[in-house]
Picture 1 (tube, rainbow, N blue to C red):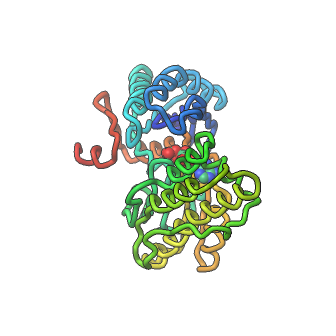
Picture 2 (cartoon, protein in one colour; picture 1 turned 90 degrees about the vertical axis):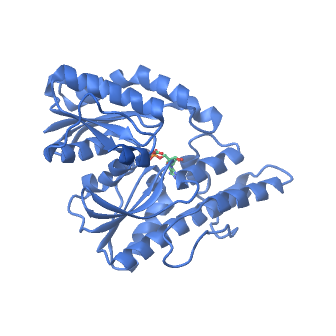
Amino acid sequence: MIVLGIDTSCDETAAAVLSDGRSILSNVVASQLIHSEFGGVVPEYASRAHIRTIQPVVEEALSEAGIGYDGIEGIAVTSRPGLVGCLLVGVSFAKALAYSLDVPVVGVDHIEGHVFAVRLAEPSIPLPTVCLVVSGGHTELILVEDWGSYRTLGRTRDDASGEAFDKVGKLLGLSYPAGPVIEKLASDGDPTAIRFPRAMMKRGNLDFSFSGVKTAVRYRIDELDAPLEGRELADFLASFQEAVVDALVTKTMWAAEANDVPSVCLGGGVAANGPLRTRFQEEAARLGLASVVPPKKLCTDNGAVIAAVGDSLLSKGVRDDASLTISASREAARARR
Ligand code: KG4
Ligand code: ZN
C-alpha cells in the first residue's frame, strides 16, 4: 500500500510517501524559520505558514516519490496532540484530499509517530521494548508491548526535555530551536565543569522534571557580570546538556531493568542530540540490551513516521471519515472516544 503521511502539528510542514509500511519513497520537511527571533513557536504564525506550505510540500513529496495524486492509496495525518490551529490545517487538507481521491484517511497520534521511527529504522527490534520519547512538547518513557500496544511508565512533571533546551537557549539569547545550537556550542565544552541538578533521581521513579535545572541555569546567568562566551559558554552548555542527558539515560535504563525488556529505543526531536545518542547506546550495551537509535531525520518531526503508523492502522481496517477532528492533548482525544 502507498500511504501519504502528513504532519503539521507544530512548526514543521511535513509530507512523506511510504510503500508497504517500510520503504520511504520521499520525506519532505519544510521548517518554519519565522519563529527563531521569538524564542519559541508563535501558534498563529505557524498555522498561517502551514496553509501556505502544505500543498507545495505534499506535491514535492509525491514528485520525489515518482507518483501523482492518483498513486495515493491511503492518507495518514497527525490529528493529536499539537497546536490546534496547526493540526487543523493538516487534518482539513488530508480529509479533503482523501474525499476527492476516494481513498481512506486515518488520524494519527504524533507521539506514536515518534515511536514508529524505531520500527522504520529497525523492524526486527526485540519486543517488548522501552522507548524514550523526547521532543519539544513531550518527554515520556513508553513500554511498547507490541506495535500499537503501549503503557506509559513515566513522563515529565513540568517542562519537556526539548523545552528545557529551548528555554535555556532563550535565557542565553540563542535562536529557536535552541537544541541543535546548544549541542554545537557545547561540543568542545567540559560536561563536568558545573554540576547542575538532576531531579527525582530516586531509583524506581520514572518521572522527569526539568524545571529545576532551568531555574539553576537562570540563577547562574543572573549572577554573571558579563555575558558568557567562548570556553565558559561551552563548559556551561556542556554541563547543562549533561544534566539532561544523564536523567534521560539513567531513567530509561531503570525502566528497562524494572520491566525486564531485551531492548531500549529512542524517538523525538531531542533524540537528534549526539551526546544523548552515544550515551544511550553505551549504557544499553553495558547492560546487555539491544538498542535502536533511528537516523536523525526520522527523530525530528516528519511525515514518514506518521505514514508508518497510518499504514499499520489502515492495514488493520482502522479508518476515519469526515468527522475526524483534532485534539490539543491526548487526554482530550481519549475522553471523546
Ligand atoms: O519532535 P520535534 O521535532 O517536535 C516536537 O514534537 O516538539 O522536537 C523538537 C525539539 C525542540 O525542542 C528542539 O530544540 C529539540 O527537539 N532538538 C534538540 C536537537 N535537535 C532538536 N535538542 C537537543 N539537541 C539536538 N540536536
Ligand atoms: Zn514531535
